[in-house]
Length: 215
Image (tube, rainbow, N blue to C red):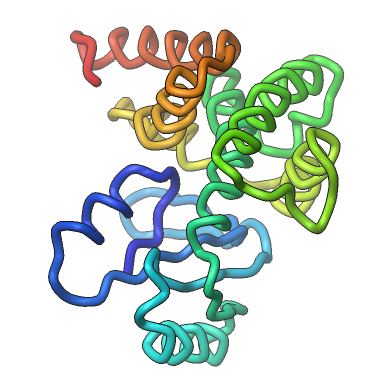
């Protein structure tokens, strides 16, 4: 099962691996404290499925196991849509908290809220081009922004994975989170100046501690 941010490895591994490949998307929040500590910083929900909707029984069994273990999970037939939805949320949260060294909840402040909205505006246009429906039966950019703020609220104390990457001075997830959105925008002829700007800023930070630009 692939339980990770972004939308990069999932289609590649699904195509390359002959066995069942399950994908999960979650709004659970957690961060590491040292080599052997994990803080569960936000309750959420996990959705499990496969990109071609061929392994429903296995996905259902795994979702039940996760739920019994205390992590609420549901088997779904539309995991591709949900992965793109999670990608939209990640793009609006992870880069900004990583660049500014803040917890998720601080994005609600005046210093960051406008930039969150600018990211979501570009992302909403990309989602429309990819035929990904707005969340919660909503309409357009307002629905996407509402989802982002909901996740920010639910994970306010969480230290996002990309911020953990920067603090640990390792390669960030920008390729898996921002990369697919930028590629899609370019393919559909859409503007992505805000997303590209975030990617460029993260690349500069990576260079500052890795010593070379990586893609």
